[in-house]
Image 1 (cartoon, rainbow, N blue to C red):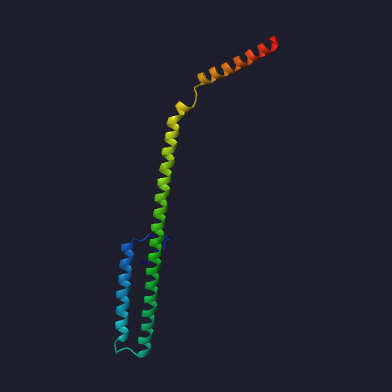
Image 2: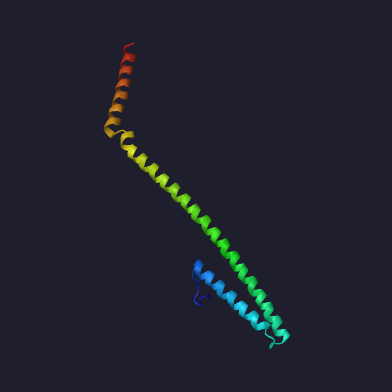
Length: 132
């Protein structure tokens, strides 16, 4: 898994990451066997053992990071599902409110009639007040 030279890194799938880890583990084992060969001098063998140890640590770090990213991804998926559910509930509530609106909101004619009745009541009260 190399980084492209033109900028953005691609997004890797879990199977690709697992394949890379397996390949890297095999390469580390191969290096260790070469280092253990009696034909190499002790200094080279030591260096290869150290490189093998460093590589094993790097592989473990990648494994831990991968597991952490999977946990984070699962948490994000769960949060997205919760938000989606909440969004659907709000949409349904909006639909039920809008369905009620024609029945709940008076028509302009009804408003006009109610205003006319109130004005008539005031006029009637005003007449009674003048007569008294």
